[in-house]
Structures are given as C-alpha cells and as structure tokens.
Length: 160
Image 1 (cartoon, one colour):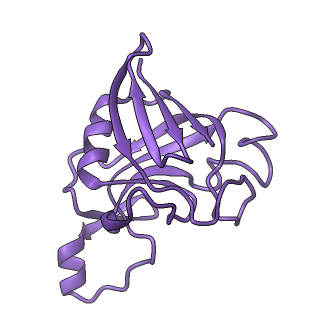
Image 2 (tube, rainbow, N blue to C red):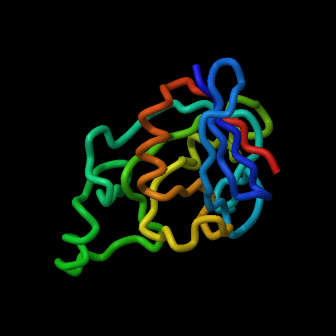
C-alpha cells in the first residue's frame, strides 16, 4: 500500500509506494491559520493520519461538495447564482482520521470530527500558499490522480 507525506513548510504532498519509493509530488495549500489541532481553530493538524473515506468516485473535476455530498458542477452553480461557501471543495475528498490519541484523535482535537480532508479546490491559483481553512487543498487534476492511486487505510503523515 502507498503512503502520503505532507510537508507544511514546503506546501508539498509526496506519494510513496509500498517500498517507500517516491511515486509523485504535488503542490498543496494548508491552513492560513497555521498548525494546530483544536476544534474550531481552522488549523492543519500534524501527525499520523489514515484515509478513512474516499468521496467523489466518477464525479466531474469541477463537482462541488457541501457536507461531503455532490451539489453540481461549479460552472453551473455559478450561472444559477447559487450561494456557495468561502472554501469550495471540488473534485474528490480523502477524509482523514487521526491515529495519535492526544495529538489528532480525541475530544476537542479529533481530525475526523474536525472534517480534515485532502481535497480539490475552486481556488487553484493559490495552491502552494497556506490559505486553506485547515484541510489540505490540491489542484483538481492532481487530487483526481492521487485519489486513483490510494486506498482507504492509506497512511498520511502531516509534518511541519
């Protein structure tokens, strides 16, 4: 099984094969509020996580998700003047579950309960800059590629 390492200071995600050989490298965007694990902080949590859910099989690259449910293509929603959230989630979602009690798992600090994802974004121009609301944003084309290469239970390490 593959593994993922996210380096916050480099705004970079690396995908490794089961022999720890680099397969792919992608620019990302982590939180504009910095590193942290507190509920409501909008910060990106550190440590060992696993992908616990994959959302978006076969959806369009510009599909918008709200509450992890597809809402329609971004271009169509904009034409219809649909009110969209500030942090638009698109393409695919890899939902993360923290694996370290007291760091990213448990009351008030739980990455799963905080809805921490690796996901596509409508704000691709800002990839490589820390501008997210806690999640790890990727270009839509990149998240679609990554999504196809990983499985539920893939290890994800988020480091400074």
